[in-house]
Length: 231
Image (cartoon, rainbow, N blue to C red; front, side):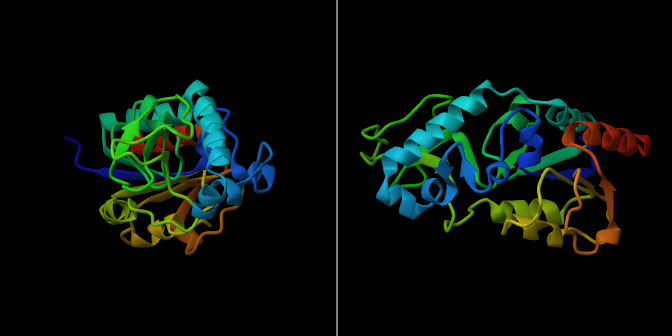
């Protein structure tokens, strides 16, 4: 069992290279959908049909997407390290890329749950759901995703993993969306910290980070070479 733990925090930028657009690409709109309307409890109350349609579309798109070199490279690190992926993404590209320990902060597209009992979760793959599709408790099924204003149940397990990391890697996230953005504050001092981002991320204590100004795929390849040199 590898003794060094690598914790990776990933965001939309890593999925973008597999063809999955981000909300930010559309200035808060996703193919004509207002994000606040389709990603909030109020939106669900006002128009559940519209929300189901939106997530059916996203689920279909995600099912067609393929893991890219960044996903596969991170999975390969498991040969030499204990690797935990903490992702803000709701797709399953990390898992399909080969990673075996993935924490989804914002839920999972391929899963749905009872709108009354959040523990009644069902994996539907790439299928669509509609009004009238019910959970085992008789309640309407809703997407198993965290909407604006909802609790992030996986944040505590994620904090624990970050606090135990020997190496911290951040890929494809602007680190401006909380609570996920606050995770890096729990990392131990003086561990290697890497960020892969083609832009200029706003980092507290930026001098502690090694910045690969690259897209996810090329950045992960270079970073893996650097990490494995030190084995």
